[in-house]
Amino acid sequence: MAAKQDQCVVGPGPGAGLGKVVRALLLLLCFAARSGALYFHIGETEKKCFIEEIPDETMVIGNYRTQLYDKQREEYQPATPGLGMFVEVKDPEDKVILARQYGSEGRFTFTSHTPGEHQICLHSNSTKFSLFAGGMLRVHLDIQVGEHANDYAEIAAKDKLSELQLRVRQLVEQVEQIQKEQNYQRWREERFRQTSESTNQRVLWWSILQTLILVAIGVWQMRHLKSFFEAKKLV
Image 1: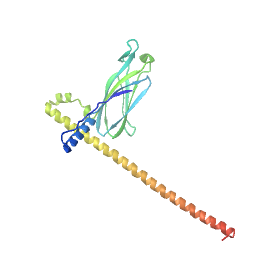
Image 2: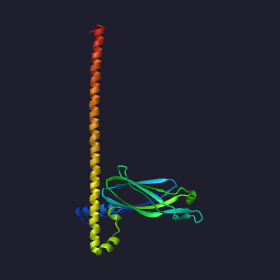
Image 3: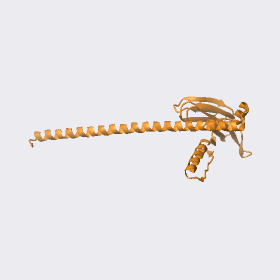
Image 4: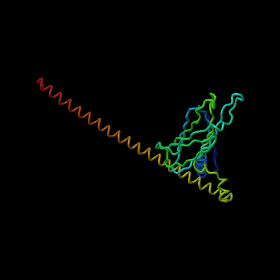
């Protein structure tokens, strides 16, 4: 499997305090703008799954296209129209929120209602080995999360927005997405804190239980030794 990821580089600014703030904001926006573009290979009955951490109430759009290996040309060519992909998406509670069959090239969309790790699985709907001819299927997948899933050119044409209005709308939606990401991180931090407190409490009670057991064993040993010495008339 191969993946391509964008890299963000932010150089030092002229100011000390202000420059740090600007660089932090640029890095935050940069990380928020990343998308999951990759390609992978699967067999005929093989299933590939990906984990995507998504905040709640966030729209996700996935675009994919498939290619079959042509042995004569020794390169990958677009798949035949009869070949399709089955897409299944599960939320962090393992509930299926999307299960649908698509063609050899398509787009799937879903909205998260629970924050956390969502599982996105894809597999071919083919059961005929003639379609694969013993080869592998290459799948190109691009996942867009949040405001990056919006087609702003279509929005501008539909709502008749000027360039400035469109840019303001993009910035507003980016801020909303960053707020969702922050709320998600707070939710993760709260879960981690609850897990830590629960673990610490269990360790504490286990330590108390061990201490009580040792005290009880010590008392029993002392009474046993006392009764032994009394029986032997040593005391």
